[in-house]
Length: 632
Image (cartoon, rainbow, N blue to C red):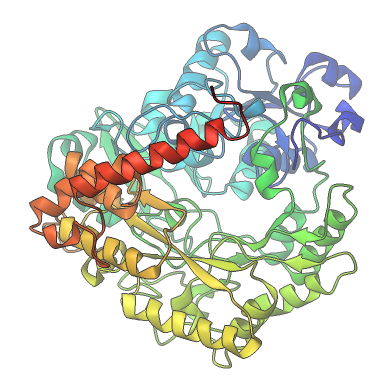
């Protein structure tokens, strides 16, 4: 989508959006807002954006909702833009943690922020939730403040902060907010709104599922007591034990309350909100979104993030894959919630009528595209198991591998008049795919839903590393490749798998990274994405990175850091000229000079050949510059 030439937004009436300015309130006949959402993202009225879905949901329930998007936190005026809300402020950093949004894994400032107008950076502060809350508290005093979104959700207890290399206090303590809604939060926020509207002070809303709060008194029947903030900050074993305990904190059928002392107060997490029914999930996507950014951004080039999701359909949430480096299960949980086929078809029909639609639906999926129902019957009433994972180290014998519900949806959408192709871009779990007994999904995936290449995430080739990541063995990936090739050959197609790999993950060393580089060499092409492990708050792998321990076994885990981590990253893309010195250093340190030279197995050239190649490239580059010009 060409952001600068986008014209649809210019035709939209501001009244179609949630109010962002006083004039918008007047246009809707309102004198004040019941709630004001303050978000670190620009306002995009699309269900892939948290502020939009919470705002529209509250609006459906009869509340007037305004949005203050990306306020200038250095002054008061932006926070006063819509006046004082009648019931309270709802605060989110946006769709990403603000620190991840700002900084690369190397802690360097990013050059683009796709959630800001024109992709420009600097529109939100570091640790946006804390900054926004403190600003609002200073301006408006004792008004209810509820925080949510992924930044708040993953920081609800004391957590390791990669950017400061220390353990920080729970975000409720630092932000001075009244309540924290963790997870997706639709049921929780409606219950909170109804309570506030009925006159119940925020400090008494300690009964809401899916919420966390601070208290001086404890009165609970079933409690999981975590090591205190002070303990986890000074004792890495205590931090690892707290992480292990929190592994069970996102099961909505577990009635236990999780508590952590912090100074002279307690941070308390209630059980998560119950999963949405399919009807409730469908209703969210029937809310009156405009599916565009707010028209005030037109002159600034729009919001780049919309291009990725505008013609994609979010079909599910939750993930029972539960990789150790991923935060999805900590935020959304492991229980799968799926929209109905009818709801997804309705959204596809809406897309078809969009003037910009070219016939291609970019994705129908979610955290994992081919998870379309609960993992097993037990999960309907008991939730997820506390003593094993659904897929690793081997798939559970009770796991339901039926792909038919998802297949029915794909068939229905691709048959719609005006749809040329339906792609699957959000990724599939190939270890789960092999549980599909008749292999029909793989057959139709290869025939209808790939644009030349299929993205999958084996993450590494070392089984030891994969075990620590919570991923299946590499042999499972190779088995999938054989099945994929067989289906392509049957159909006469020349499609291939594009693997994603992670370097620098806890449990990997230079030898593992070299083996990965050799595998990439033998693939015959360089993968587009090699991700350097990023220790973000809350994940099991981040606890390993900080403590050097596996929280589940309390056994030591090797953790690459500093220059070695950089060498692993460079080995993942060994052909890049800027990585040459790091790759050579890694090979020499590992006594693998046999991979330096001109042979077929070499990863990099020797210094003499490299200098010769560099001169040749410089001549070619100079030739291209002077081509077509008169040279004296």
